[in-house]
Length: 118
Image 1 (spheres, rainbow, N blue to C red):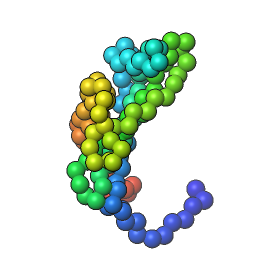
Image 2 (tube, helix red, strand yellow):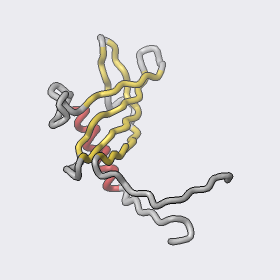
Image 3 (spheres, helix red, strand yellow):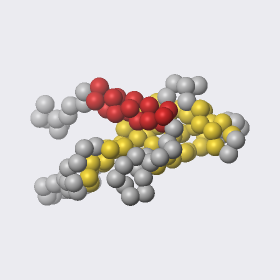
């Protein structure tokens, strides 16, 4: 690899984000937009912690197949316009997807050590 790196990286605590992807079992989540049904098969949930506050879900990006079999992407904004609480009108099933992603992130038990330091 032709790459060099220097410095001591530091995380900016003003806004830390984590994206959690979950595969959805086909047929378990149907999204309807403009009268068309879409079968969701993947969700990518973005969580953020601003100024060291508790984590909040910001958005869900869903991959789905439309009635024609073509894949589409649908994004659901989860925070209200002032970014201080949940957006009204988000279907309860979308919040279930968020809960699944949050649970999955905690359940996988990820640990990491840089190569050669394990």
